Length: 444
Image 1 (cartoon, rainbow, N blue to C red):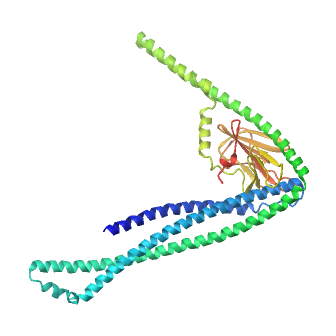
Image 2 (cartoon, rainbow, N blue to C red; image 1 turned 90 degrees about the vertical axis):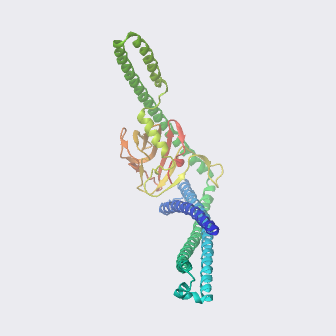
Image 3 (cartoon, rainbow, N blue to C red; image 1 turned 120 degrees about the vertical axis):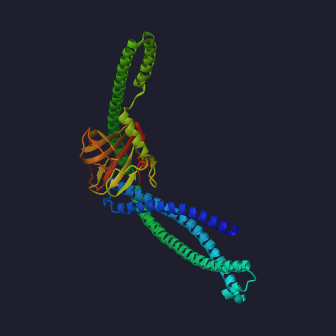
C-alpha cells in the first residue's frame, strides 16, 4: 500500500509539472510561429537596387531589422528546445515509473499462477469447498476461492491498463523526440540564413565605408528634417494638452456649480424645518462645497480622457503594429550607433516601420483625430487616446480628418513610397509631452 501511494504521488507530481511544461512549450511555439510568419512576410519586402547612399542606408536598416527578427526567432527556438528537453526528461521519468509498476504487477501475477500450479488440488473448487470439516470452514473456503478468482481478474485488468499507459507514454516520448529533432534541423537552417544576411550586411557596409562624407551628409539632412517635423508635432501636442486642460477645468466648474445648487437647495429645505439645524447643516454643506471645489486646481483630464487613458495603459505590450501587411522595424527608438560604421549616430523620437508598397497606416487604439497636417508634401496624423497621443507620419493620403473618432486597427491613410521604393511609416507615441518607446507598447 505504501509503495502504491508513493508511486501515485510521483506520477501525479510529474504529471502536473509536465502539464505546466507543455503549456509553456505551446506558448513558446505560438510566439515562434507568429515570428516565423512575420519573418516570411518581411522577406517579401524587396531591397532597393540603387547604389546611392540613401538607398544603401535603407537596405542596411532593412537587413539589420530582419537580422534582429531572425535572432529573436532563433532564441525562441532554443528556448523551445530547452523546454522540450525538460519535458522529454520528465516523460521518460514517467515512463520508467509506469514500466516498473507494470513489471511489479506482472511478477505478482506470475507468482499467483505458479502458486496455483503448485497447489493443483485446489483447482477442483467444488472438492476443495466440500471437503471442509464444518459449515464455518466451508464458508471461509468459498469466500477464499471467490476472492482469489477476483484477485486474478483484477491483476489481469491492471496489467492490461498499465500496458496501455506504457504504450501511450512511449508514443508521447517518441513524439517529443521527433519534435526536438525537427526543431534542431530548423535551427540549423535559420542559422544558415542568418549567415547569408550577415554577408549581405557586410557587403553593404563595405560599400558605405567608402562614402563616409556622403553618409554624414545624408544623416545630417535626415536630422534637420526630423527636427522640423518634431517641432511641429510638439507644437500641436502642446495645443492638444491645453485643450484637454480647458475641458477638465470646464468639467470641474460644472461639477462645482451643480454641487453649489444642491447645497443651496439643501439649505433652503433645512431652514424650513429648524434654524438651529439649518445653521449646523449650512456649515457641513459649506465644508463639502469647499472639498468639491478643489479639483479645479488639480484636474488635467476629464472623465472621458481618464477612462480612455486607463484602457490604453491596460493594453501595453499588445497594441497592434500601425502598418498593414508584412513589416520590418528599420529604425529604433532613441539614440544609437550603427554597427560597422564609425561616427554614425541615429536619434529617433519614435520608430520607422518599413512595409510593402501599398501598405496602409492604421490606428493602434480607439481615439479621436486631434490633428492632420502637411509637412514636405506628405500628410501626418495625431490621434489622442486620453493622455496618450499616437503620431503617424509620411502618409501620401489620409482617410480621416480632425475630430473623427477612430477604432483600433481602423485605416487612417496610405503610407508614402519614395523614389527608391521604400514604404516607411514614422511612428511616435507620447504621454502628453513625454516621448515613449513604441516598441514596448506594440504586440509583436
